[in-house]
Picture 1: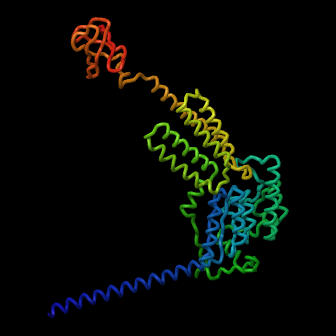
Picture 2 (picture 1 turned 90 degrees about the vertical axis):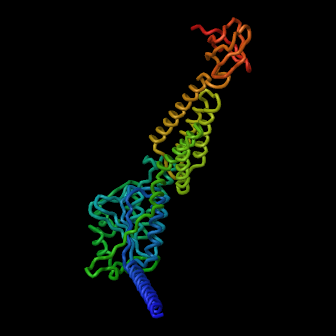
Length: 451
């Protein structure tokens, strides 16, 4: 009885200890969570944009502003180095920054970086615009997606819109409107020192720490209200400012790659080529699987890129013609029409207003590749059609058999291990070798085979 009580007491004590440990761990987790939230609220948030402006970029900036606001960050720094990008994405980014509920600093850095084309619009839209030593800003004249000048009335429309857009941004932020408009009309570009002297940007900072020291205490207009940037709560005991870097999500990274106009085009063509090879050679499986995946990725990209319906229809028509060439004896008419439709569809893939174009070298390479695949498949088809039959009744013609018994007008022959009724105009001895001349139903015509 005593032993049972002791064992029961030991079990109870173990349960109490485990409950106590669990309570301590829960308390520590809550404290760490609260500490992390407090640190997030005291931290300056930063994102780095290093590359062309795309739909993924505007999604990244939008989510970064939202995250910074939710965490109570006093400031968001957008470190920028871009050669330009899509005007539509630039408009979205500018709208997000102008309406941001917290101060946004656009910092052109590091040394050697530039805010070119779309970068000018984004830099001017910041509550505070800063540049690192050795950086440049300017050359914002609108060009097509292929880098060429936009000709005709459409070029004038795009230029006038860009001038009014950049002028509005500069006017709202109290910056040099005349220079901003000249950056669009004349593609002027200046260094960081000239930018400060001409009131294009607010300050020069060698690094992020210096930038934060310079902006601390400045007053900016946020949502129509004057707000002073206060970073004292974000400083450590040593005096530095705590900075939290936000990174692109996996979805944004993938979107950033596939929304490049040329990449989206390559995915679309790779998908069509894979399905074309699968339909041409059923059962190969891999081309069909890879093609389906590429087409789905291209479809995702088409949701944010300005796709022209006529271009898509021409591409589909081209694929239909190429498939028809394999099935119908058009003597190359369908094949030539398919390649022509693919070329035109590639040229008209994006809407004229977007000024996006697929690189000409990619179009040429794709059409040549499709042509080569078509010729290769047609060569296999022609070779198979010319090959003599090796099975069935037709496959017996020209084969050598053995007479089963004497053939005098009619008889029997063993060919391919099978017994056939045979007829011959010549007398053939038993077990003599014969050659099949024709096949008529279940009767074959044979002649003696000369040894």
